[in-house]
Length: 392
Image (cartoon, rainbow, N blue to C red; front, side, top):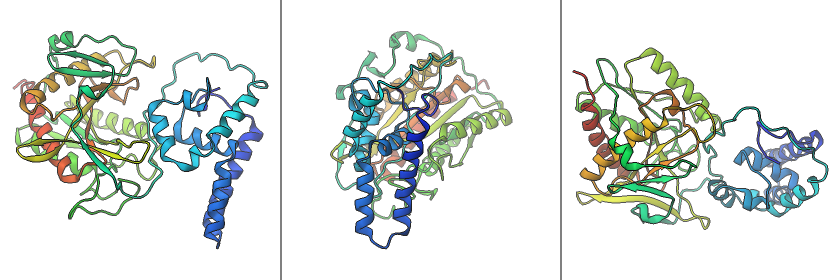
């Protein structure tokens, strides 16, 4: 029984009750003069299966109730659940609720067409900066289902069988002509880094800010400058598609990319620049960092989407081949700068071009200066490769 906004429609009475409890929680927080009482009330709501079920649906999206809630969750969903005391408090109650509902639910008809589950877009529930940051240089030895060749590793989270050597042999048929050639944009532009030194900002959420000097817009500007120094023409979309609403960011950014491709048909490369978030269940935050020229530098990671959900994306291997060629250049120039490529089931809007790559610059545990160094080195190396794609 999926908890999915596009899937199962739960009993109206249960949904209404859950919404009433959610509204009650907001009312208590907004109007009570007894903060301790408000906290007790919210905790009691957190132990209500119906209330937590509603929150899980909003927070985690599709969840199948096979052998219990925790068994059904993906690794990412477990991470979100573990970060929220309110959600995790009602896990046992939700599982019990599912068990009692098994008997009175009619089977749902099979879907007639694949439905895309958007990539995770849930902002962390906590609002304080990380207090325990651990440095790691992340490599293929850190676990994962890897396809490898010539020291290039792809963490394959799909059902696809990959031949990395063959991807390296594929020629890149992208030709860059006159006019804007590269679009830099940010589906999650408000993502930011751990504050450090003078790099202080007003947070809009945990490790997020609307201040363009400290979020992904700044990282995009640094990359744009490196590309332009090599003679490439760049359009930088500085829209905050994840603010004020985080959910639905990919739908909004898709419309933005389509508009730019229509306005500038010469654009052949689309880089969706993010930062990663690595938070353990005990609250430890990991920064992905290496050392280049004696300076701590954020690692970068390329993420490629596929058609593993059944949605149309026939040219996903061309995006992957481009990433593999770039990875080889990065490995040659800075052996530990790039984390292994990740292949995902979602499309990430990469069906729009054959030159689309999602680039993760560091994690929420990195500092802004570490991220800037990583972004510059990535752009310098990628830019030199892109220059070779020009037709004149």
